[in-house]
Length: 360
Image (cartoon, rainbow, N blue to C red; front, side, top):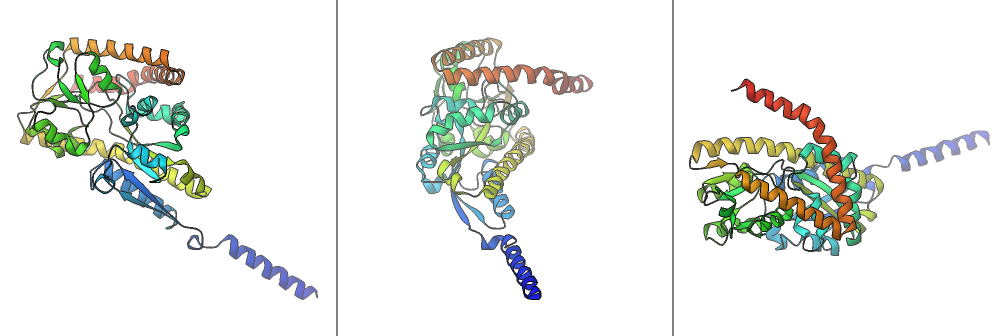
């Protein structure tokens, strides 16, 4: 009896061990659909979604697969918010400020004029109030939002005519989204938001007079340097963060380990997109300088920068006065920026100034 009892115990323990250590292939598998704002094989932005999907599948040993539909497939590049909210897609990849017409407070989570740099903003997201505040904005819409890749400081745009004064901006039709578009509107610009695939044609045909897109790598690909000679430095988007939107019901259906894997894959892909942007922009700017000597780098005149800074402060004050949630987001960003910038000044800025002096 003792021998049989011992054998039964051993067999039972072996069965339990087999269940606990069952291979991942025996566990439930999930295939999620992702809609991105970008076209097929769109560099950098599209690479972020592909990298995220590949990492999620590998880390989950094939239990979590993500199928990507680009804008040419779903036909709604600026409809990602609605499609993920409705559950038509499980995940989206886009930019939060595209939804300001639907939910105004979403625009704060991409980049703000005269705001944080990429490293400062990531610190705010993950170690400040950023993620909590962003989730507060998206929760009523049945979605989670995660940082989805940063472009770094964006260029201020391509102009067919040189801007020598504030008066030169009066009546200029420009593709520029987000809060910066509202700021530019205050000083006479007529802003509009156009899907990426239509930008070149709009600039070429004169539908718009100027276009702000991203930076050398993606701008070169769209060919703006063939139309416009004046390429302005940025003030409006110092840390443009894309986003991964996840449908709340989809997220809740995933087991905890796959939630952790998806979260890690999104975070890693976002970081990789930031350094990828630096790499590709460096190469593209070298190419533009060599092959398109017509392109002139310009800073906006002092009166323009003064005017847009004043307009920015005015609009932020109005937004804070009209909406309690906006007020908390604006105050959180301003407080974090002040503290972080104090250190940036004695570290990164001091280093760059030192190097500039050495190279003079």
